[in-house]
Image 1 (cartoon, one colour):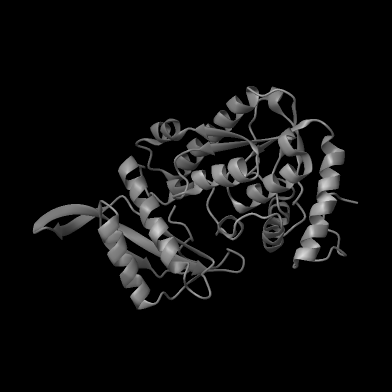
Image 2 (cartoon, rainbow, N blue to C red):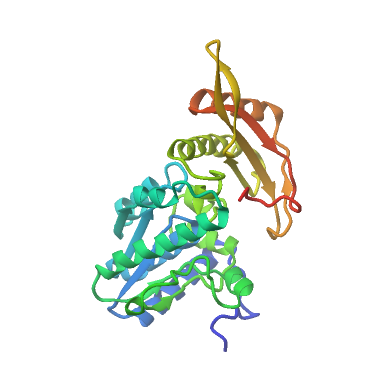
Length: 324
């Protein structure tokens, strides 16, 4: 039987009872696979890696070493939440790496989207490899591979795999949720006791806010993206139903504004909210006018450097979900 093929008889995990049975099964499987050895996990704070981390902690405790790399491109409060949930509440063996300056220095002046992505990916691998090289007894690598990743990439999750590690840092994989769909992963995460803000976190691109700070990244505009995005997530998160994805992008373009009777140049924050079934096509979501006005007023009042708020009503195709 192909270990990367979901059995046709496998029941969908939709209830706490089914999630508990799956967790018990995977805890036993991980213990058998790992024994008394150590597992290394790149913990981004996203849904998949967080659920895998919580499951592995339940299975092998401090035999798991989690490495959280803060590259400065995460959403507001995310690095702090990772530390709070995993180190303080779950007692994880967590290595926190503050690599903000390192990443932003490498990205300075780079405006091509693909070049930005390559720099972020390569630098992450380098930082992760450096941290892995400091550890002893690591024989396994935990990964948040889920079933759609296998289906879409023929068994290789290139955008999440810590590929490119040096030859002396290659490990056997531990992938406890690789046969689950995203909705099932969320049910398992809920049963493991992870907070709703982590379990139901919306999709987030691998390069993070680096692709929403459109063009060459500057620290002041990156902070503006982070703060404006936090406001939009807070407000649109009150909608019922909540859209599949919603965020802010800030293009590298300035326009004239007036404040305290003086003209000045500021950025425009672009609000995007979409629904999709397969991410191949996506539809813009109607946002109530009073909510748009509230976000506009808050962003302009609370976020330095922004003097306009725009609403992106484009569908995919022809527009992509992200701006870069």
